Amino acid sequence: MNRGISFVDDMKSIINDPNYSDLKLICSDGSVLYGSRIHLAARSECFDRLLYNGMRESGQYEIKFPEVSSAGMKVVLEFLYIGSIDANNLTTQNAIDAFQAANYFLLTEMEYEIMKLIQNYLARTQNKEKALELFSLVIEKINVTEKNGLFRLLVKYILRGSISSLPVPKITLNMLKILLTQKFIKVSNNEYEIFRYIVIWGTYKISPKISAFYERILTVPSDSYRTSPVGQQYKDPSSFIHLPKPAAVIKEVAELLTFIDLKRIPIEFLANFVHPLGIFEPSRISEAYQFHAIINAERRVFNYYQIIYYQWEPSICKSRLLLTENNTVVEATVYSAPLNDQGVRAQNIISGKGIYQWHVVIERRPQAEVLVGVCGVNVENYSTIMKYHKDVWLYSIYGYLYHDNESELAPLWFTEGDTVTVHLNMYANVCSFLVNGINISVVFQNLPDRLYPVVVLNPGARIRIQSHK
Image (cartoon, rainbow, N blue to C red; front, top):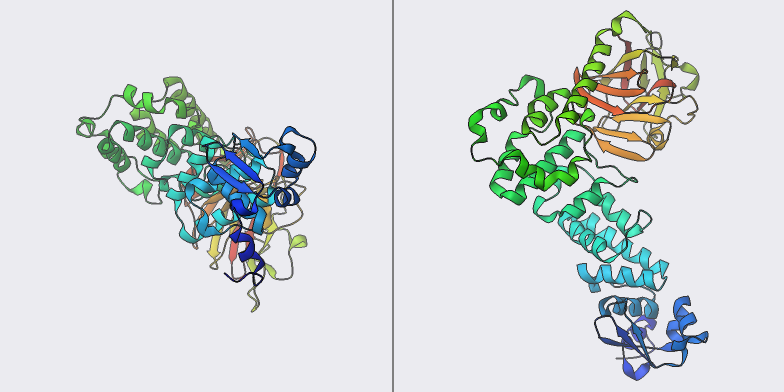
């Protein structure tokens, strides 16, 4: 090889070469690697303190690293010698070992590079099984916290989209518990679908055939729910032949049932699918029924009070938002150049105890996002960045629910021609949505005492607000 042409190639050629090394690095698996004392110290503060600050290792030729595998150390040497990592040298196993080694040697930039390589790989391949494999190794080998960058990256990737997309055979109990308990990101699903996945996962451990049966009979929420005979097959006694007793299912999923909030499951699914399965304590089922009974009773008496005639607020509309029909219709005008979306709140502030309800009609929508919801009185920026605000609660046309930089997926979505009803119970400070009359249950809780109706729309969209009559 001709030297002096490429610095990187020259440095690569002496990595782990005993002829150009004065250190033996003995790794956790007993393998021996070689390195240059001066080079390692110049590139790493950790090695500098270890080798030149009077520590015991300063005068040693052989240094043991019982916390670092040889696979991880090889990548550390590559990074310290040439300043980068060849993606072709990373595998599922050594990527995690390398990240662990980078953390051990306080090589923050190396951690970032490994995360970037993994992120690019997952974005390119859309390989969720590989993400789960990496995630399994991370929680096995690394003391994970929400501050761990690789852990956060993998959790966000795995929980993107429906939980139903996760391959059941690849998920362990520990993995599922960790995914369901993260606070920095919520599982992007409604509560019923989390319940459904847990049952399918638990029964798979009993028998794949039984799991496949539950996957068929536990209906996935859809717009056609109210008009389809869901639950009939489930209620047919012949459907239960050869099924495991509830106790057998409970044994497999008991640790996961505490993560399910039954009050967030629509009453139709609670009655037809959750309750008949018999895996929840009667007191939890009863509490959920009572909650829905109170909510429904409040809806029935709505017409007797809290009637408000809603209008959009002209003073906060930008130039390209057009208000018509006595400020009940807002339209985002179309320009030739691409523009960011904008929003508008209603004139009417909602405060005081009571039940409030209004309808948002999507009369026209572009091929872009539309958001419907409520916001606090201190919000000033009305655009899609609102969904990352702690005082904003929004329901997206794509079915996502947004609040304070968190998101989850609702069981229904809406589109042009649909009517989204916002139901605000200010006795309990909770908000729920209905799409064309179909309830998606309580989705936001612990709301403040003063709120505005709000929408965010893109150029070409036309949205009407209607009072409930």
